[in-house]
Length: 287
Image 1 (tube, rainbow, N blue to C red):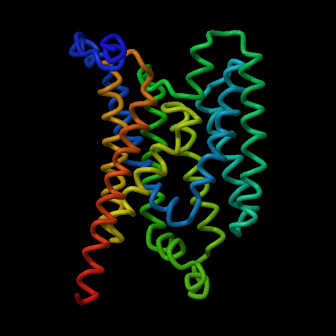
Image 2 (image 1 turned 90 degrees about the vertical axis):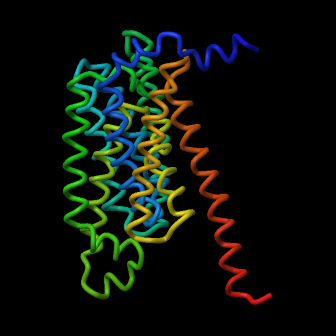
Image 3 (image 1 turned 180 degrees about the horizontal axis):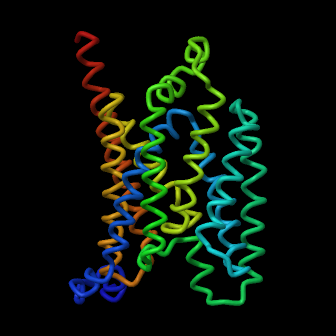
């Protein structure tokens, strides 16, 4: 039993290891904050399923780039943007969107597995596309992540008000002249961009842990248009950076730590939200 726990938590050389992963900590912080923020709109627009669909085609693009010796980040971006454009253009209604995503997911995953099976290089590179490799983030990867994150944040700020309106009440927004179709396509492109860089860091199978779970947790404890994004960014930051710091003390990949922290935060928020709801009902309904 002691050997088991020692493989999960072992902080004997922690100080030396911490000095080697500065890029990874910055990448985790940026990804957690931006992922948490855009995740609020993902939840409000009921598009959690879309995140997974985009990640599968992003994985296929990255695997193809790995096989043919191209830039993996560029391949991931191409796959993500193709998926985002298809979902945004063809899936204006929820039923159509879910059907398209259901078709894209197995296709993208199948292509990715095919490309990885043909790849003759190290198995660690193949495994990293599925589960992430945040502890080996280099300067070019960090530059891609920061640059794309800045673009996503700037565009989100520009379209913030109409996007909030369209996400909360799309019928009224359309009646008021909000260009819902254009907004949907722009948002899908932004989502595709952030999913692409997320796949490089935490892997195609675990993108939801930073792009959905933090926002879902925040929505459990508040409905404020200000508090929810702030909490989602804080939860995403805590999950990503906390996962990195814990992973340094063990021999396991980073993914289980990130997903566990994210899930625990969600459970706590769910309990807190339920307790608050009970207190509010007691105030409204007299004894």
